[in-house]
Length: 627
Image 1 (cartoon, rainbow, N blue to C red):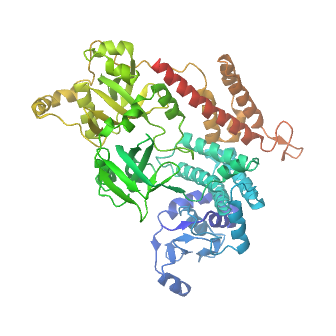
Image 2 (tube, one colour; image 1 turned 60 degrees about the horizontal axis):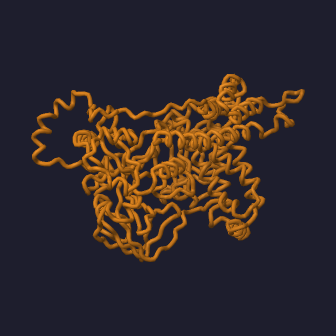
Image 3 (cartoon, rainbow, N blue to C red; image 1 turned 135 degrees about the vertical axis):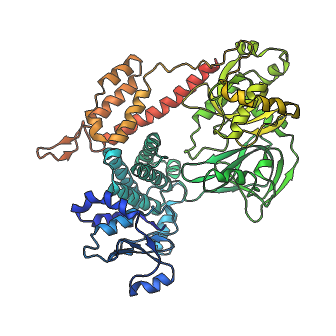
């Protein structure tokens, strides 16, 4: 499918006759069924079609829409033409352009590197130099992106349409063209979220849209107000992932996890540890579905020409020379990179075993505060390394006794201590295993039956304190990548396991163990903090009009009763700023109490507060579980 640049889409939609605006959504449904042909339908298209630069949407026997492409992308509005009598203000042209996916690349555009003047290239290079103040073009682009994001917030999902998306796409394209790469990346994410919501895709999540919109408004606001060179450099971002060269590195395989994203990509990510205990990653991910996971797991690492597979990675070591890594500690290699497989002691290696010696409370605080969307995020920042004992299982996962003692204390403990005695002294948590595959079900049943002591790598669940999502375990010195590897069963137990298989499927999956409690005591959050996040997301979903009429007095009173006075004040301010000021002709005006940007700023303040307060509250509740 060809792609289209944001400015081209916006210009085409602006040319659409106003009386046809309401019919565009229905036309889009029909446009998705139009056949796309590469054959020319007029003499003028023959030369371009011969070069593969022209494709045609066949609307009906008499009408067609022709796209002229540059490297598979519609660059200008003039590149989309219709042969009907109403063109270029016709519905066919607008629908054909709107059905195309947006181009997010930088190789082509209305002002590509080849088309830029010498002054353009000089200004862009100067703006990318460290410490350079914001140029007039950068400030204009940041302001336009702020305004288009504000328009999304004011309209909400119920009011946002193709014209809202097109304005955001054009502002995003202009921001990328002047070197505001971080803001452009966020604009692309918001645009993707809007399109997913409009097309009712299963990957759409309201909380993700609210989070992306919060980050976009925050970055664009700071761009137009920050003056410190280091802050401006960080806010501009980078066009491409920058890599830092390394000399020689000795790495130890840690574990591999399966990845199946909602964007249509799948594969595996392998994690390694260097001699200093720093975690690195290397990925094999491609467009596709879950069927790619198994083949990626058995494929060689794309690093230094090694034949080491992801399956073997966690059980081996590696000497890497001439490699490089990005800021998020993702390893990469070029022609000069060489990787050699070495022997490894596995998780008994001091660099890895030291990860399990770190205080659990510190690990949880670090992992829960890690933001995968932040540029400072690095491989392993959201992982915790735990020692635990399996008590049994429930309907969804394992019940574990978490050992929070120091390594020396744990080693000196009596090996004959029962699980019940340990549970009285230590913390009980819940562990979910990845997916619901036969491998996962086998591992769940096997661990519940054996009830071993083990080392566990997991991610803490942000929404359910006391619950972790297991990724890998070390069982009697053997690495098991949960969801990818099956825990082996001794031969003498195979017959018993087979005889008990039918009973195991019908029995409730609960195992008693020495009278120990099998349900983690997860304290409920007694505060009304969630009310702020709910109102923030409601504003994104329903827009300014609903926020203006929402009854927030009860919510504010509840927040005040919980001593969350700042949260209550922010909601009251949001309600006030949602009501615009008008002049005698009912035109919106600026006023001291309701400035023009008052509503988006009030929403941004509430969104930033809700995010930070919820994050710290999550850490606090997790620490209460440990206590």
